[in-house]
Image (cartoon, rainbow, N blue to C red; front, side):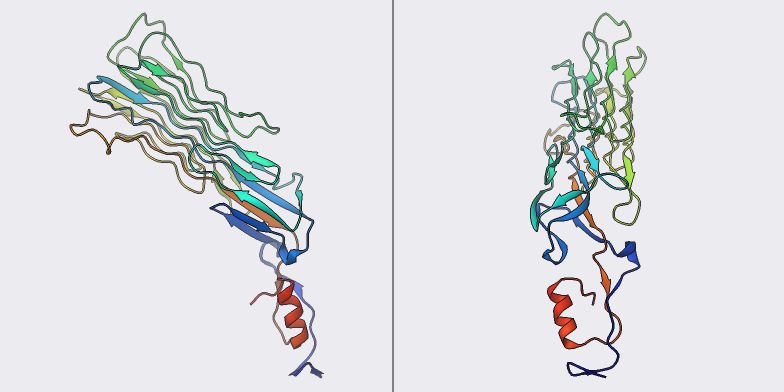
Length: 320
């Protein structure tokens, strides 16, 4: 049959078998989301992950006791699977948060993770900061620090969990050891720690949460591990980062994983002879925004008329 200059049978488009014909778009940097085929408004599933919280290196000149709580994982919000998709017009802006920063898709905002609290002889220690998941606390001087709030600002379901706290265990005053908690993750609270007279103590970061909106299971928004020790003699203790890009604690701390919203790991190690930049504070991993549009990808095998090729390319449903 003649069909616009091509000889062969006329065929109709069929949905791709990959991801059920759904179109998946991942944003690792800010940009603009465009509905497939400019056919808005349309229901769109989403995953929005904020940037992970940073952590202090925990090492300052002339400090004998050092350490830092882990950064909290970035806020985690999703409609996939089984949630309520958003109705999106033809286009909408997308913001992908860097360290400690929010990610935004339409009306959905996922908060940046909370910063981990530092712990030095001069500062005495600090609670972590609130965020999508809270940063872990660090402590050296008198008293304790409670868990740091995650899910801040509050969302339903919660976008994250608390960072770990520190318990002075009844100790009346400062000693030669520090203790630092893990940052919270999307799936679990960061590990709290109790001061032990014999050794410093570091907590693990909270686990992140797995999601398969991309077609593969990926874990996001893990909390960073804490780090604690005596900077003159050691020993030093390092918490593990939570699954989902949370970084381990280490001698100079570690950054969270970009694209997963992982919290940074705190730092504790020997006092540096040259100071910064080796002992600069560590940043959390950047976030991500992923969208999934139902029944939007078509297979274009077979013989097509020229008119159909033009039509489906204009509709942005042609698969090369």
